Image (cartoon, rainbow, N blue to C red; front, side, top):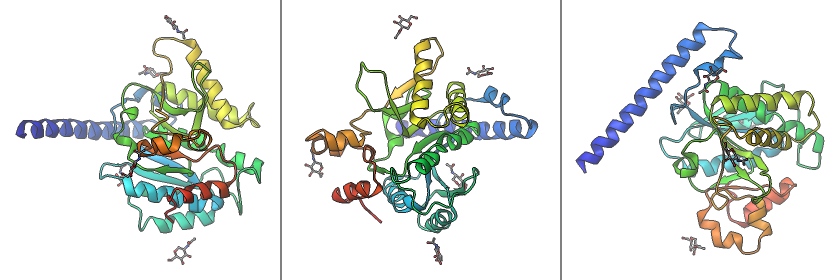
Length: 300
Ligand SMILES: *[C@@H]1O[C@H](CO)[C@@H](O)[C@H](O)[C@H]1NC(C)=O
Ligand SMILES: *[C@@H]1O[C@H](CO)[C@@H](O)[C@H](O)[C@H]1NC(C)=O
Ligand SMILES: *[C@@H]1O[C@H](CO)[C@@H](O)[C@H](O)[C@H]1NC(C)=O
Ligand SMILES: *[C@@H]1O[C@H](CO)[C@@H](O)[C@H](O)[C@H]1NC(C)=O
Ligand SMILES: *[C@@H]1O[C@H](CO)[C@@H](O)[C@H](O)[C@H]1NC(C)=O
């Protein structure tokens, strides 16, 4: 017993020291250079879980949904759980989310730097164009934190967390990006951009940089998910040593709406294995809320 405790202490101490070293090094590095955009990649170490974060976004239409997700996170968080950053797209969301920080541990609220929107009712499909503009900002936020050296778990607001994913083996091991694949093999993968774990590696950062650039330029009208996947598949096709390493999250633990609603019996059989459920494959916000309520998972 004492031996094991000793070992745990040693491991803890090593991790802690590496984090401190890493933070000190990053700070020194950042202080010593100003025009970093390209060079920042050179110091990118993967020292493990010392700087990770959960990232999500919301606007006025998604406030309750986002609060529901954040509440589910409160129920599964442990003392080592990372902070959760919410990017608010409008003033109303910013104020509402800031109020929530009184009750939600580790919640950090930021205003978007891409210009606040005055969205009253940005529901999926009802205002398709505006909604696409909203989700298209996701990669930019992800990039900002990757460049600061964070491991970023990006989650759409329409996810519900039943267990702590940071304890799960799917988040361990050697990979650049872990995501849920919406199709079955041997089909070309189609990763969902709404629940993704990004490590701040060279491979990840160059991919996300290009993703942002394409969404700003040639692929203005393409869904961000398709651009994301064409970049991923292009990298995977290269099949080179040291190339992009994708990890497919286990769909039993990270299911999507397709499995939950379209495959008869699947949900009842697997519901206790769900770690994070993504309520996608439903276009209307109201139908998402209705499904969540039916499961008894509406907490706000
Ligand atoms: C990351 O990229 C930089 C420059 O592009 C390179 O010097 C460095 O060795 C790369 N790091 C890894 C781990 O590949
Ligand atoms: C979480 O945020 C708080 C307040 O900004 C900060 O002091 C703390 O170091 C952060 N924790 C982690 C694990 O990033
Ligand atoms: C935030 O809290 C303040 C004080 O409790 C309240 O007056 C305000 O209406 C709240 N704002 C929102 C957007 O909920
Ligand atoms: C990737 O390359 C290796 C050899 O370098 C080869 O054995 C393997 O079949 C290739 N995989 C694909 C999917 O092309
Ligand atoms: C899921 O867990 C609940 C509560 O522990 C239990 O009643 C139910 O039988 C479980 N369902 C399955 C399919 O294992």
